[in-house]
Length: 183
Image (cartoon, rainbow, N blue to C red; front, side, top):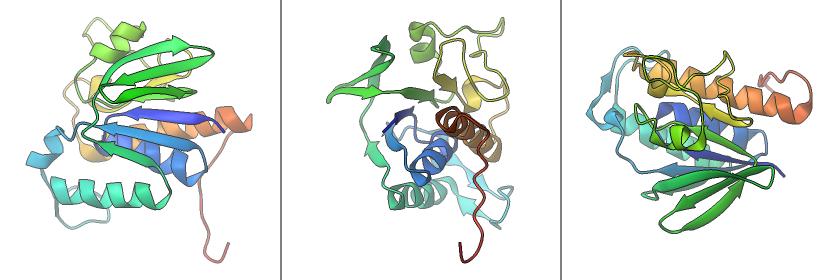
């Protein structure tokens, strides 16, 4: 089964993980828990009147874990390299293999740049509309791809777009993640 490694546990990374884990891809999330979301109070997240950033993250983590994603809070990724048709993800605790990697590390572009992902003249990671970088099967989402557009809901949408692109690649056709009652 393909493995998706998500580097970052804010709204973008957790959204990616939700879609991939829900659709039965082995999903690892590496989360240093240093997101700016801990300072946020959201009144502009659809479907939620208001919520503190920390509470939103807790809800998102619980939802991701219900679909059996392997959430590793506090485990920092120190390197990502291409290896054997996929990626080798290194942390202080070990090394993990993944078929896909999704970078969701806020404005920190160091890991995708070290992997060889192209950047824009503004220093952002360059992606297409499906969040694909210039490195095959590597994606970037959230603040590292958008200059000064740091809205949680936009980042979550980026994560969903990357996940759907991965799911579509695996299926060999476009995938839409719609659920219906009673199905």
